[in-house]
Length: 479
Image (cartoon, rainbow, N blue to C red; front, side, top):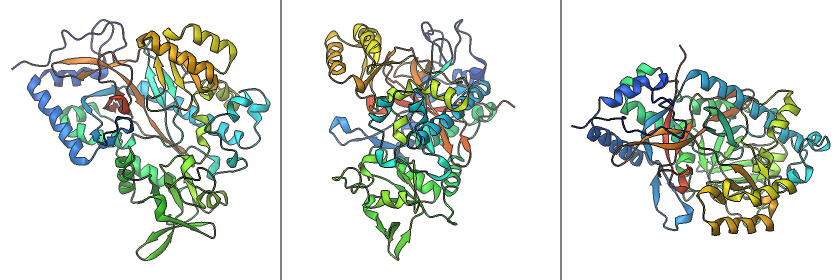
């Protein structure tokens, strides 16, 4: 039978995670490549098919709102992992820790003294006009002065082999359940090579998550609930999975009631007070008395209970101000301002359409740029200029002119590629990286990540809602 063969594998034009520019295999991939080359193509397809079945049996599905079909899909897990050596990972972890500390200082400042605005480190009007800025949070002080307790930072590796921050996710970052379940599946798929490579574990993430949530309240034992929008939410699998793994209650807004500014869960034995809520419901929908009055997802009075310190909300309402893609452009300056340090993980060059000179440049060069909505997510509201038609570019020019505050632009970066199994062979596909950071009394960065992969040849869009898949991310131990 035909064996796995990399002789025709294309490496030109991109940074490849497995092969260097001379087609030599990178040290971190040597043992895995040897294991792959012992397999027949049919065996590899069988392993991939078994992986797909495992995902279905575990319920690892999500719903795509835009297709109007109501069909749940698996987040396709490609069985060739993304491998990161210990040196690269340790450098990433230091940069992530620096970034999350500075971002939380920024959020705390914005709802407090606003020193960064007064000192013109970031334009006041840009911050206060952000969709994520909530004036209702002015003067609030969450436990430990931490606003974003759970963050997922999207990174890419460029042609030069260096990592760059693509965007920050500080509200309700998703995908960590896929990181954990992908690992369990891949450990069974390649058990021998997994053991030989000394891959750092990720299984204790939910234990660290529970510990972090408990550290935010004085109540002991703490009663913790995961607040979900419900079974029709695209990430419901993750909400249920995390609640089960932590030993927490999975609740919807209708399961909670506020009495005398304390939050309780309705149970068969009566009311049970809730101390910490890990919410997976956006700010606008958590409390119809304060935010979206038509919301059926939240609980009336929840925000007042939080404001009085009678319940902890994770992540804190208002943290989304630092998610704004226009704010992103100023983060290196904010790191310098709050920490007195140079940025360890650089941004991608960003043009802010709300600024006159930047907007002029974007409009004149839109066919060479990637344009994004400042409050967009999931790959929606985005234009990839070099891969777009003239008509699509013209439509975005009109959108930018009508609402420049709502758009930023960046040069197109060739995301690194990882070998990926296709119908007939193995080809390089573009990937990004989403590590997860827990921040309570201290910071914990789990040595793993969700690697998202663009399954369509040549595509740079890795989002699951746009047809992307995932890979297990193996971080190697240096010992």
